[in-house]
Structures are given as structure tokens and as C-alpha cells.
Length: 220
Image (cartoon, rainbow, N blue to C red; front, side, top):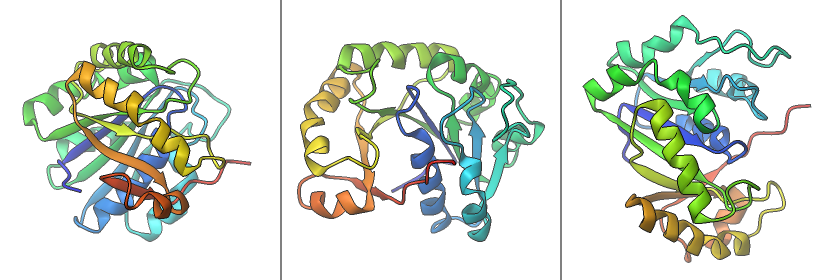
């Protein structure tokens, strides 16, 4: 995949943003020397990029995260280190943005500099199996709320329909019409279909632009 200097990963709560962001950071490291994964999800998330901290460090990927990550404190604190995303022009970053518009407000602090440089992609992660985004219309509503809160426009869609460890190839294939309708209504391209490594083997000749992922383990 061709990456801009900044890649923003946004979507509804539980859509799978963090797994995608972590795997993108690994993929970026194959192409660039200085790579960072920034966890901007300050809204008490289900998975945290910090859970993959040892694997990221082993690959030489910088992890930028709130000091309150993996604690029971829900404090909307944006670490000062986060501004390296816009200040260090040699750093290629993927940013795990918080769920819905509430999480995207934090991104709004960085958006003027991101717009000025204009070397970014902002991808909407869609998952048909989340209860509040079961159809294209509801997903587009979430998308517009995030754009307004972040003061940035989306540039593409990532199809990540899944049922966790129970996801099958048929779940992905049956969700394609849902994603195509979102693309039609938004005018945005579907840039990736992200799936677990096991499911990717079954879909290799059926779905374009597959992005096989090694899934994070659920925190204990």
C-alpha cells in the first residue's frame, strides 16, 4: 500500500481501528525508517495500541500514547509528544483516533497543521456487525459527525466487518454490498478489506485489496 506521511484511522466504537492501526504500523516499517503509531483514542477504548507495545518496540516503531493508557482513569489528556506527528516531517505516522465524534475532537487540535501540509489520508473503518452502524445510512451519519469534529475530510474507506474470532469468509462477502453502498453515498473509494490472516487465505481470489492482519489479543 502507498502511504501518505500521516494516516488517520477513524470509525465507530468497536469497529476495529486499533487492530488496523497496529498492523499498518508494521506494514509502514517495511517501507520507512521512522514510523510511529499514535494512540489518540482517549475515550476509554476496548483495545489499546499499548497492548502491542513490546511487538512495536521490537520492530523499532515509536509508540505515542497517553500516560493514562491501560489504567482505569478516563482522562481526555493529549500527550505533548503527540505533536511530533505534525512537527517531525521525517516521521511517518498512523493515528488511532477515538470512536465517533467525541474521540475525533482531540484530533481537531492537530487538524490545522495536517490540512496545511496536506500529506494525509483519513480512512473510515466500517463494520456492518456493530449495533449502531448496521446499514449504510447510519454509517454515513457517523462519518459526517467525525468529519465535523475532526475538521478534516475522509479520503477512503476500510472494510472491516467482523465478528471477532468467529468471523468467516462468508461474513466478509455478505458485507460487500453494505460497503459498496457506503462508497456510493460518500463518493469515497474502498481502499482495503482488512481481515485476519486465516480468513485472508480463503478470500485471496475473491476480494481485491486484502489487508491480512495479525489480530491483537484481548486484554486480560
